[in-house]
Length: 66
Image 1 (tube, rainbow, N blue to C red):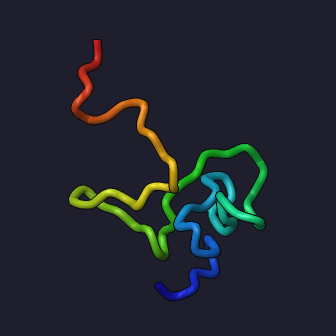
Image 2 (image 1 turned 180 degrees about the horizontal axis):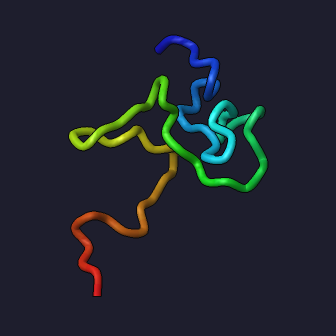
């Protein structure tokens, strides 16, 4: 994989400041949520973004809402 200057290869950016990485040494520490990097981790209806290491989903699309 080539070097991604936007997310510094962590594949996620800050949702509030999308030009800053969400993880790593240079991560944005504003407390905002992470968002897939639009450069190297883009997604669409047919494919999901690559998740951060150790990520565990609390809800899946197969879960039923009450």
